[in-house]
View 1 (cartoon, rainbow, N blue to C red):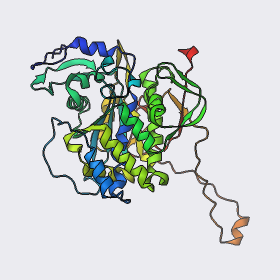
View 2 (tube, helix red, strand yellow):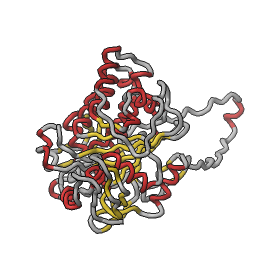
View 3 (cartoon, rainbow, N blue to C red):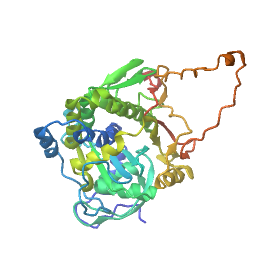
Amino acid sequence: MSDQLRPRSAGSRNLKTIARHGRLKKSNAAVAVAKFLAGSVAVVLVSGFSVGAIATYDVAASVQPSVHLANETDGPVPSIGAIDGGVNMLIVGSDSRVGQDAAFGPEDSTGDLNDVTMLLHISEDHSNASVISFPRDMFVSIPSCPDPDGGSFSAMSSQKINTTLTYGGLACTVLTVEKATGLSIPFAAEVQFSGVMAMSSAVGGVPVCVAERIEDEYTGTFLDPGEHELSGYDALQFLRTRHGVGDGSDLTRINNQQLFMSSLVRTIKSADTLSDPTKVYALAKAVTANMRLSDSLNSVTTLASIAIALKDIDLDQVVFAQVPTGTTAGGVKAIQPAFDNLFEAVAADQPLSLSGTTGSGTVADPNAPVDAAPAPAATTDPAATDVPAVTEAPVATEAPGVVLSESVTGQTAGDYTCTAGRTLKDQ
C-alpha cells in the first residue's frame, strides 16, 4: 500500500494538506458529547412525553442531509420501540469552522479533522453499553475510501486517524475504524462546535468537578477547584481544553471528556430531564439540527429506537474506555495484544470491565454520592442475641464479562471524577 494520497478522481486532496492540518494546535476534541445524545435525546420523543405534533414536525424537519456508508443497504425504517439486537455507531467530532461562530476562528483556519472519534456499542440484549475513544494522533492503516466527489482514494499504510475525515469524509473514517477493529459499523454521525453548545444548554447545564485549577489560554478556560455547571460556549471550551488538563496531552483531554460525558449521561437520565418536555424537545432538536448522520441513522424514528435501547441501562454498565496506546514518533500507536483483546470482547458482545485507572487527566471525586449501607437484618429469635455472631468470609464475585487490560483507561457513567487541572506555570 502506498503512503501517498493518490486519488483516482479530480479535486482530491494531497498528503501535504493532511500533514499541514495535523500540525495545527487548535483542535475540537470536545464534540464527543454528540454520541450519547444520538441515544438518550430522541428517547422521550416517543417513550413517555409528547411534545406535540408541531414540535415533532420541527424536529424531523431539522434533520440534516445524510452520508452514505460503504456497508449500508436499504431496509425498512424500524418501528418505534427498542432497536432489535446490538448497535455499533461511530461518532466523530469535526474541527471544521465552516458555518460556525466567528469566535472559533475564520472558516479556512483549519481543515476538517475528526479530532474526536468514538465508537458506541450497545449489547445485543441491551443490558450494557461501551463508548470507546480513539486518540486523534493514533496511527492507523487507512483502506481505499470512496471520494465524495466521485471515484476513490488509494489506501495508506500509516496515517493519523484524525486525517480520515479530511481524506474521504465520514464514510472513510468508518471504513478505517472497521479495518482497525474488525467490527461492522452500520451507523455514524458527525457533529461540529455548535452541536456541543446546543446539547449542553438543552439539559440546563452539565455539572463538572474540578480538583485542581484549570488554566488554558488557548481556549480561555480558567476554572477554580469545585463544582461548575457548564453549558453552551463554556461547556465546549471545557471539552476542548488540553493545555489546562493532566499532562497537556490529547490522552488526558480524553479523560476529561469522559468525565463530562459521564455527567451528561447522568443528567439526561435524571428525572429532572426526562420529566421536562421542554428539555426533551431541546435535546432532540439539538441532535437533528447539529449532526450530520449516515443514511441509516437519518431518521427520528431510528434515533428513538436506539435511544430506547439505551435508556434503561444501569449507569455502572455504561463504560467509557480509551483504546490502549503507546508513544511513537509523531504520535501514538496501539498496544498489542490489549487493543485486539478489547475489540474481540466487543465483537463477542461481552460486557466490559475496567481494571486500569481513569487516566491522569482525572481523579476520584471525594464528594461522590455514597450508597446508604444496608440495615442489619432483624433478629426474630430473642435467644440469638446471646449467641456470638458468626462472621463468614465474603463470597468472591467476578467482574461481569471481560476484564480489560490495565492499559485501557476509563470510567463508567456511574463513576464520579474530577478534572486534574494544570496551571500556566506547569505548561
